[in-house]
Amino acid sequence: MKISNKVTEQLGKIISGDHGSAPYLSGPRLVDFYNSCGYDDSYGEGFPSRWIYSTQKIEESNGTDRLKIILEEFVDPRRYAGNEDTLLAIVDSINQLIKYDGYALIKKGFSFKVALLKGSYIDPESVLKIGHEFVSEQIEKCQEKIALDDFSGAITNARTLCEAVLIHVIESVENVEVNNDGKITNLWSRAKKALKLDLDKAELPEYVFQILTGLDSIVNGLAGLSNNAGDRHANKFNTKKHHAKVAVNSAMTLCDFVIDIMSLKFK
Image 1: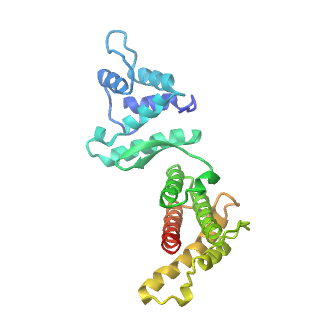
Image 2: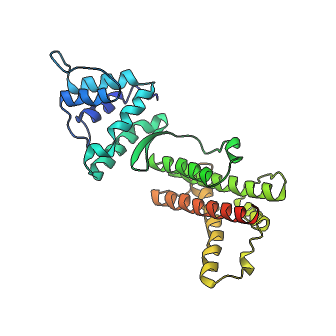
Image 3: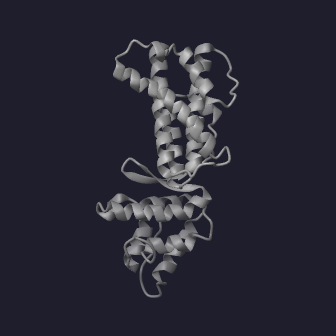
């Protein structure tokens, strides 16, 4: 993990407790913390100022896996005795520093992990393994962008995910190669036909029918939102976090449903 030298001192001060929301760490406790991350230092006479020592450790670990270990250990929830507000404030402070180098601390389970942010493309090889795990991985990338306040990028990623899943369905069922014209609504119409998913004539209870027809709204809304708020076009919309979250969550719902239907009908 490599970050800019411009932020190493700020990170050092956050960890020592000289800046931000993190608790103050005395010299001995600061040494204990860094030793838990792989160093073998001793506290004693001639020990530098706490923030200077902390910054030195960040600089020494920069460009190595140890920096990742330090950050993940520092935001271990167990260090903050259940004080989630403090923890989240610390995570946000660190993310504001490391986002410029393409990193973010993302919550996974009960802990936070350093994630490397990538572009909005999807690796063609990963599409061959499309399924719920694939969708979860792509949604995680969307959430990483939201954590860095890249709301337009998250929306673009969500649309790209839907396009990849719909193309996979069409190509798998029809045994053809799809030439994507960039219109996700066309892909959705074709995928519904491939899956024999005729929602207009579905013999379903009204309440189920209403939920399923909501998928049409998801696709239409995602098309419009990504065209006006995504990073693939000029942003004509003041994109907010809640817009990005609803786009990402809607994309996950659509993709999970399509994959379930495909697995049931063509297993």
